[in-house]
Amino acid sequence: MKKLISLACLALVASQSFGALSLLTSRAQITETDYVEWGDLGAEGVFPTNPFLVSTHGTPFMVKGQNGSGLFWRVDQGSFWPGNMPSGSNLLYSGDALSLTGAKTCNAFGVDIQANNIGEFKATIEAFDGLGDSMGSFDVWGDSEFLSGTATFLGIRDTEGAIHRVKISVVGASGGSDFAIDRVSYECCLPVPEPASMTALGLGALALLRKKSKKA
Image 1: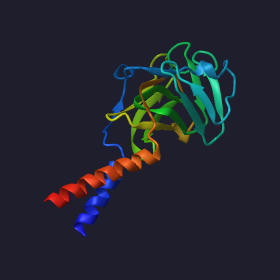
Image 2 (image 1 turned 60 degrees about the horizontal axis):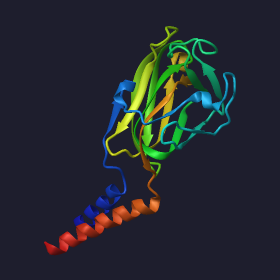
Image 3 (image 1 turned 180 degrees about the vertical axis):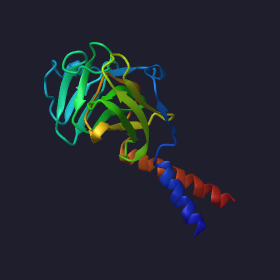
């Protein structure tokens, strides 16, 4: 029974990432190979569709954005958005939790973020692998104010480069969940593993363990 449990556990682990996640608190911690420029979704005042597709600059690859409220809005710092983002930056407003799914996996991901409600807020970033499984999450606290250039940075890194989807959410003052983000920085990239190839990896590891157990 112990052998069966060990084999099953190894097969499960082999089908998932062996990487370790870490929180990033500065864009300088990312070697940017690709980025999303929100101005590509249209001029300020445009309401992007939900979901939307946008191409990165760099490699490039496609990124799908989606939220539950159905509300996205293109705004610019210092104009429709008088917050603390970098001056003049193109922003994406999201009515609630936002998921960004890349056509490739990445090593690292990061954005500046600000809650719509003025005051202290908690931002959460969660990473998912190519199978849709959560790899873990981190919380950071920020202050939503009007001083341009003081926005909170929210980023995440995986040592194995297995990040496929990132979910960003906010709990703001008075419980507000809407927020804005600026340019998305990616450090990447690898093609997203197909489920079949992930299964093959698990079976390969299982076969190797069985071979070793027979020799013992």
